[in-house]
Image 1 (cartoon, rainbow, N blue to C red):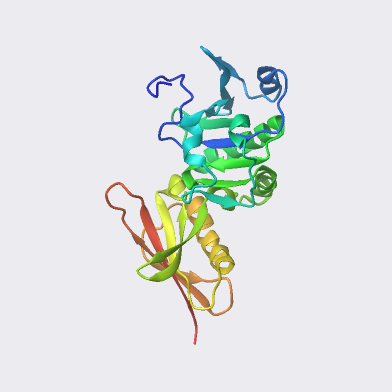
Image 2: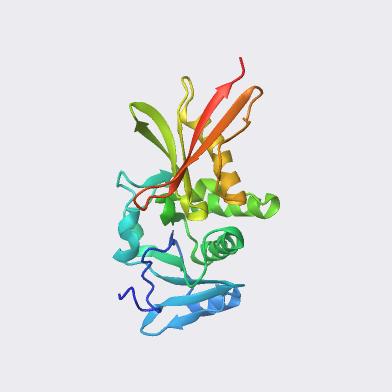
Length: 255
């Protein structure tokens, strides 16, 4: 495929998602039209469509190697959250890629999540991959998280941002991957003694949600933590050599 061709479903450097289907209608185009997604078949590729939902415009296509190379669930660089993929997952994989002037933040995220739920239902999708986070998760869990988003306004952060355990300067730490797609920043924090990964994810997910909803953190600040007497210090630092900026998070307790 030619990445310079507007009608090419190749994701290039844009955010994209993959859905692993368990079923599909006989006439995909008609089913998409009945869902109100205004499908436009792409010339020369009967398995590719341009879809619209409000101002959101995406490409949907059978996912070839140019989509799936980044998504190998066996690779150390890939994060997997509660998903056990069939070895033949590539044979039933569809790619969805926002195009044009769309971005992944704000109302575009809300519309993209709505569209993803419609496609999950259409395809009987069992697994979802979100490329900015290099993260696989269960499509059904994503669907439930989007329903919660519609009720509470909280984005499905655990399906869009990976929380990875790392060693930083000889200390165990947790860093996000994929948050920069929404606000140009990632988050990182050293793990305090006695804390486990679940405790870190609960707290850093709260920071990530705040950044997704309200934008990047521009100046050093401190806020109350999840528990009484707990404080969260957040210090932004710029990125370098094309890397996104990051927010360094530190936890402390009174006394």
